[in-house]
Length: 274
Image (cartoon, rainbow, N blue to C red; front, side, top):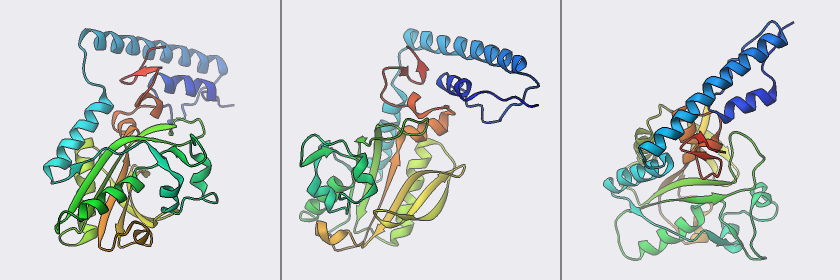
Protein backbone atom coordinates (compact mmCIF):
# COMPACT_ATOMS: atom_id res chain seq x y z
CA UNK A 1 0.00 0.00 0.00
CA UNK A 2 1.22 3.51 -0.85
CA UNK A 3 1.04 6.44 1.56
CA UNK A 4 1.11 10.14 0.69
CA UNK A 5 1.06 13.33 2.72
CA UNK A 6 -2.41 13.93 4.17
CA UNK A 7 -4.38 17.03 3.25
CA UNK A 8 -3.68 18.65 6.66
CA UNK A 9 0.02 17.90 6.24
CA UNK A 10 0.05 19.39 2.75
CA UNK A 11 -1.74 22.50 4.04
CA UNK A 12 0.79 22.86 6.87
CA UNK A 13 3.71 22.52 4.47
CA UNK A 14 2.20 25.14 2.20
CA UNK A 15 1.84 27.53 5.12
CA UNK A 16 5.60 27.39 5.52
CA UNK A 17 6.41 27.78 1.86
CA UNK A 18 6.55 24.27 0.46
CA UNK A 19 4.15 22.98 -2.18
CA UNK A 20 4.46 19.17 -2.19
CA UNK A 21 2.73 18.62 -5.51
CA UNK A 22 5.27 15.96 -6.47
CA UNK A 23 2.98 13.47 -4.66
CA UNK A 24 5.80 11.86 -2.69
CA UNK A 25 5.00 8.22 -1.97
CA UNK A 26 5.93 6.40 1.26
CA UNK A 27 5.81 2.74 2.20
CA UNK A 28 4.15 3.30 5.58
CA UNK A 29 2.38 5.90 7.67
CA UNK A 30 5.37 5.97 10.00
CA UNK A 31 7.77 6.72 7.14
CA UNK A 32 5.43 9.46 5.84
CA UNK A 33 5.05 11.09 9.25
CA UNK A 34 8.81 11.03 9.88
CA UNK A 35 9.37 12.69 6.50
CA UNK A 36 6.74 15.30 7.34
CA UNK A 37 8.33 16.12 10.70
CA UNK A 38 11.79 16.41 9.13
CA UNK A 39 10.53 18.64 6.34
CA UNK A 40 8.56 20.83 8.77
CA UNK A 41 11.67 21.25 10.91
CA UNK A 42 13.67 22.41 7.88
CA UNK A 43 10.96 24.80 6.74
CA UNK A 44 10.49 26.17 10.27
CA UNK A 45 14.20 26.90 10.57
CA UNK A 46 14.26 28.56 7.16
CA UNK A 47 11.19 30.62 8.08
CA UNK A 48 12.74 31.78 11.36
CA UNK A 49 15.95 32.78 9.59
CA UNK A 50 13.91 34.75 7.06
CA UNK A 51 12.14 36.71 9.80
CA UNK A 52 15.42 37.47 11.58
CA UNK A 53 16.95 38.66 8.29
CA UNK A 54 13.99 41.00 7.76
CA UNK A 55 14.46 42.47 11.21
CA UNK A 56 18.22 42.86 10.74
CA UNK A 57 17.97 44.28 7.21
CA UNK A 58 14.56 45.92 6.61
CA UNK A 59 13.40 46.11 3.02
CA UNK A 60 10.26 46.91 1.04
CA UNK A 61 7.41 44.48 1.07
CA UNK A 62 7.66 42.52 -2.15
CA UNK A 63 4.09 43.44 -3.15
CA UNK A 64 4.92 47.14 -2.73
CA UNK A 65 8.16 46.73 -4.67
CA UNK A 66 6.36 45.03 -7.55
CA UNK A 67 3.73 47.77 -7.58
CA UNK A 68 6.43 50.45 -7.78
CA UNK A 69 8.45 48.64 -10.45
CA UNK A 70 5.36 48.13 -12.60
CA UNK A 71 4.29 51.75 -12.20
CA UNK A 72 7.74 52.98 -13.26
CA UNK A 73 7.77 50.76 -16.36
CA UNK A 74 4.29 51.79 -17.49
CA UNK A 75 4.91 55.50 -16.86
CA UNK A 76 8.09 55.19 -18.94
CA UNK A 77 5.91 53.84 -21.77
CA UNK A 78 3.56 56.84 -21.59
CA UNK A 79 0.85 55.63 -19.20
CA UNK A 80 -0.72 57.92 -16.59
CA UNK A 81 -1.20 56.45 -13.13
CA UNK A 82 -4.64 57.08 -11.62
CA UNK A 83 -6.18 56.40 -8.21
CA UNK A 84 -9.93 55.90 -8.00
CA UNK A 85 -12.36 55.17 -5.13
CA UNK A 86 -12.52 51.76 -3.51
CA UNK A 87 -16.28 52.12 -3.05
CA UNK A 88 -18.31 51.81 -6.26
CA UNK A 89 -22.01 52.03 -7.03
CA UNK A 90 -24.23 49.19 -8.16
CA UNK A 91 -25.16 51.42 -11.11
CA UNK A 92 -21.53 51.55 -12.28
CA UNK A 93 -21.24 47.77 -12.07
CA UNK A 94 -24.55 47.36 -13.90
CA UNK A 95 -22.90 49.12 -16.86
CA UNK A 96 -20.48 46.20 -16.85
CA UNK A 97 -23.54 43.85 -16.96
CA UNK A 98 -22.85 42.82 -13.36
CA UNK A 99 -26.38 42.65 -12.01
CA UNK A 100 -28.14 40.29 -9.60
CA UNK A 101 -28.16 37.40 -12.07
CA UNK A 102 -24.40 37.65 -12.75
CA UNK A 103 -22.11 35.10 -11.01
CA UNK A 104 -19.84 37.87 -9.71
CA UNK A 105 -22.74 39.64 -7.97
CA UNK A 106 -22.85 36.98 -5.25
CA UNK A 107 -19.19 37.63 -4.44
CA UNK A 108 -19.51 41.37 -3.82
CA UNK A 109 -19.15 43.02 -0.41
CA UNK A 110 -22.04 45.50 -0.06
CA UNK A 111 -21.80 48.40 2.37
CA UNK A 112 -25.38 49.53 1.78
CA UNK A 113 -28.20 49.01 -0.71
CA UNK A 114 -26.49 51.01 -3.48
CA UNK A 115 -22.74 50.63 -2.95
CA UNK A 116 -20.10 47.95 -2.50
CA UNK A 117 -16.35 47.49 -2.29
CA UNK A 118 -15.11 47.30 -5.84
CA UNK A 119 -14.70 43.76 -7.20
CA UNK A 120 -12.71 45.13 -10.17
CA UNK A 121 -11.04 48.32 -11.39
CA UNK A 122 -12.59 48.44 -14.86
CA UNK A 123 -15.72 50.61 -14.22
CA UNK A 124 -13.69 53.45 -12.73
CA UNK A 125 -11.07 53.25 -15.47
CA UNK A 126 -13.77 53.40 -18.13
CA UNK A 127 -15.03 56.61 -16.51
CA UNK A 128 -11.60 58.26 -16.19
CA UNK A 129 -10.59 57.20 -19.69
CA UNK A 130 -13.70 58.78 -21.19
CA UNK A 131 -13.23 62.05 -19.27
CA UNK A 132 -9.60 62.36 -20.37
CA UNK A 133 -10.72 61.99 -23.98
CA UNK A 134 -12.30 65.45 -23.68
CA UNK A 135 -8.82 66.93 -23.17
CA UNK A 136 -6.83 65.32 -25.98
CA UNK A 137 -7.16 63.91 -29.49
CA UNK A 138 -4.26 61.50 -29.00
CA UNK A 139 -4.12 58.14 -27.25
CA UNK A 140 -5.31 57.99 -23.65
CA UNK A 141 -3.13 55.55 -21.70
CA UNK A 142 -3.95 55.02 -18.03
CA UNK A 143 -3.39 52.39 -15.35
CA UNK A 144 -4.33 51.80 -11.75
CA UNK A 145 -2.90 49.52 -9.06
CA UNK A 146 -5.24 48.95 -6.14
CA UNK A 147 -7.22 46.64 -3.89
CA UNK A 148 -10.29 44.75 -5.09
CA UNK A 149 -12.64 42.63 -2.99
CA UNK A 150 -14.51 39.39 -3.69
CA UNK A 151 -16.00 36.82 -1.34
CA UNK A 152 -13.89 33.84 -2.32
CA UNK A 153 -13.88 30.28 -1.02
CA UNK A 154 -10.93 29.74 1.31
CA UNK A 155 -8.12 28.27 -0.76
CA UNK A 156 -4.44 28.60 -1.52
CA UNK A 157 -5.14 30.38 -4.82
CA UNK A 158 -7.60 33.17 -3.92
CA UNK A 159 -7.80 36.14 -1.56
CA UNK A 160 -10.86 38.15 -0.53
CA UNK A 161 -8.76 41.34 -0.71
CA UNK A 162 -6.33 41.26 -3.61
CA UNK A 163 -4.31 43.73 -5.66
CA UNK A 164 -5.07 44.36 -9.30
CA UNK A 165 -3.11 46.17 -11.97
CA UNK A 166 -5.36 47.31 -14.80
CA UNK A 167 -4.07 49.19 -17.83
CA UNK A 168 -5.94 50.56 -20.83
CA UNK A 169 -4.98 52.40 -24.02
CA UNK A 170 -7.84 54.19 -25.81
CA UNK A 171 -7.15 55.20 -29.40
CA UNK A 172 -3.87 53.26 -29.68
CA UNK A 173 -1.61 53.90 -32.64
CA UNK A 174 -1.30 50.79 -34.81
CA UNK A 175 -2.78 47.33 -34.43
CA UNK A 176 -4.80 47.07 -31.21
CA UNK A 177 -4.01 43.42 -30.49
CA UNK A 178 -0.30 43.95 -31.07
CA UNK A 179 -0.38 46.92 -28.67
CA UNK A 180 -2.04 44.74 -26.05
CA UNK A 181 0.64 42.09 -26.51
CA UNK A 182 3.32 44.76 -26.07
CA UNK A 183 1.81 45.95 -22.77
CA UNK A 184 1.47 42.40 -21.50
CA UNK A 185 5.13 41.85 -22.33
CA UNK A 186 6.14 44.97 -20.37
CA UNK A 187 4.28 43.77 -17.28
CA UNK A 188 5.47 40.19 -17.44
CA UNK A 189 9.02 41.37 -18.09
CA UNK A 190 8.96 43.38 -14.87
CA UNK A 191 7.52 40.44 -12.95
CA UNK A 192 10.11 38.09 -14.44
CA UNK A 193 7.90 35.22 -15.60
CA UNK A 194 7.77 33.39 -18.92
CA UNK A 195 4.25 33.18 -20.34
CA UNK A 196 2.06 32.26 -23.29
CA UNK A 197 -1.18 33.74 -24.63
CA UNK A 198 -4.57 32.09 -25.10
CA UNK A 199 -7.98 33.29 -26.31
CA UNK A 200 -10.81 32.45 -23.89
CA UNK A 201 -14.52 33.16 -23.32
CA UNK A 202 -15.42 35.67 -20.57
CA UNK A 203 -18.58 36.39 -18.53
CA UNK A 204 -18.04 40.14 -18.92
CA UNK A 205 -15.96 40.73 -22.08
CA UNK A 206 -17.26 37.72 -24.09
CA UNK A 207 -13.71 36.99 -25.30
CA UNK A 208 -10.37 37.66 -23.64
CA UNK A 209 -6.69 37.21 -24.40
CA UNK A 210 -5.41 35.40 -21.33
CA UNK A 211 -1.85 35.23 -20.06
CA UNK A 212 -0.81 31.76 -18.93
CA UNK A 213 2.15 30.75 -16.76
CA UNK A 214 2.73 27.00 -16.66
CA UNK A 215 -0.83 26.57 -17.91
CA UNK A 216 -2.39 28.76 -15.19
CA UNK A 217 -4.17 32.01 -16.04
CA UNK A 218 -2.59 35.08 -14.42
CA UNK A 219 -4.14 37.87 -16.51
CA UNK A 220 -6.97 38.64 -18.90
CA UNK A 221 -6.78 41.20 -21.70
CA UNK A 222 -9.44 42.51 -24.07
CA UNK A 223 -9.77 44.83 -27.06
CA UNK A 224 -12.52 47.20 -28.15
CA UNK A 225 -14.77 48.50 -29.63
CA UNK A 226 -16.84 46.32 -27.37
CA UNK A 227 -20.49 45.75 -26.51
CA UNK A 228 -19.91 47.37 -23.09
CA UNK A 229 -18.48 50.59 -24.56
CA UNK A 230 -21.68 52.57 -25.35
CA UNK A 231 -22.77 52.50 -21.69
CA UNK A 232 -19.59 54.47 -20.89
CA UNK A 233 -19.82 56.71 -24.00
CA UNK A 234 -16.72 55.13 -25.50
CA UNK A 235 -16.78 54.84 -29.29
CA UNK A 236 -13.27 54.04 -30.50
CA UNK A 237 -10.73 51.22 -30.39
CA UNK A 238 -8.95 50.40 -27.14
CA UNK A 239 -7.04 47.60 -25.48
CA UNK A 240 -6.54 46.71 -21.86
CA UNK A 241 -5.49 44.02 -19.41
CA UNK A 242 -5.79 43.17 -15.73
CA UNK A 243 -3.24 41.34 -13.58
CA UNK A 244 -3.58 39.85 -10.09
CA UNK A 245 -0.31 40.82 -8.45
CA UNK A 246 -0.38 38.40 -5.51
CA UNK A 247 -0.77 35.45 -7.84
CA UNK A 248 2.13 36.66 -9.98
CA UNK A 249 4.35 36.90 -6.89
CA UNK A 250 3.25 33.45 -5.73
CA UNK A 251 4.20 31.90 -9.06
CA UNK A 252 7.42 33.86 -9.43
CA UNK A 253 8.70 33.09 -5.92
CA UNK A 254 7.39 29.52 -5.71
CA UNK A 255 5.12 30.11 -2.72
CA UNK A 256 2.75 27.31 -1.84
CA UNK A 257 -0.11 29.71 -1.10
CA UNK A 258 -1.22 33.12 -2.34
CA UNK A 259 -1.94 34.02 1.30
CA UNK A 260 1.80 34.48 1.79
CA UNK A 261 2.06 37.23 -0.82
CA UNK A 262 -0.41 40.00 0.01
CA UNK A 263 -1.85 41.98 2.91
CA UNK A 264 -1.77 39.75 5.96
CA UNK A 265 -1.60 39.53 9.73
CA UNK A 266 -0.01 36.09 9.51
CA UNK A 267 2.75 36.61 6.95
CA UNK A 268 5.39 39.22 6.26
CA UNK A 269 7.15 39.07 2.91
CA UNK A 270 6.20 35.41 2.70
CA UNK A 271 7.40 34.42 6.16
CA UNK A 272 4.94 33.09 8.72
CA UNK A 273 4.99 35.27 11.85
CA UNK A 274 2.06 33.95 13.93
